[in-house]
Amino acid sequence: MRILVVEDDEHTRRFIAKGLKESGHIAEEADNGVDGLHRARTEEFAALIVDRMLPKLSGLELVRNLRQENISTPILILSALGDVEQRIEGLKSGSDDYLKKPFSFAELLARIESIVRRVDKSETETRLTVGELSMDLIKREVRMKGEKIDLRPIEFRILEVLMRSSGQLVTRTMLLERVWNYNFDPQTNVVDTHISRLRSKIDIPYRYPLIHTIRGSGYQMNPPVEDS
Image (tube, rainbow, N blue to C red; front, side):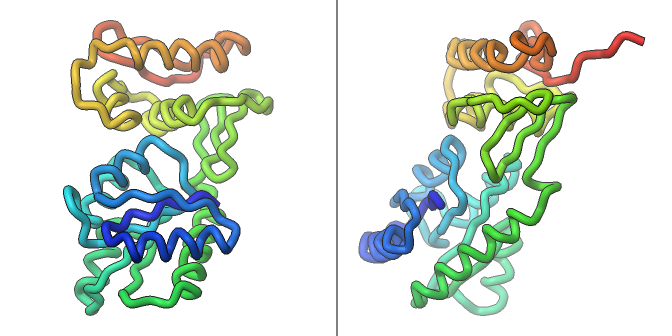
């Protein structure tokens, strides 16, 4: 599994990353909440390990932001704050588990594997479908009419945002914020360029237009209307 560790204490962060790597996983690191949020938004991880007290953006705010954007990556919060009310607050923020410091690495690993297994079993949360296009968020697979389509990670993320908002307008600004975490002029053509690439892989080869341009506003994903 590819796991992101968001922890500002270098000793703790390196300890966790080392243990994950020795257990056969891929460990990525971030030392503050803003960088952790950006990476969790724009990259694909099997799980996140997030310290509650982070510089720039707290761990709880990081989790809330991800859940508000319908990013369902399993998250375990680490914290020295461990009384009942604090654990409840952490879980209510949208995290899947909460572990008090100091902790045993063996327990940390067991808890991470447990929350990932729970997500694996939740088909309703890990599969998206629009018409004959389907996305498996666990296997990281996209299929059109049963045929697998190879997408780059950024293309996968754009498509996930569009599919989660099927039937609704998704503006260029929304895509910039949710996919790239950019907060600047929405007239930049980076969105249009990637949408064009998505269409060349999904809409055009299958003659099944799904991604529709709403002139002057953004995009909307809808299955084609079948002739009666």
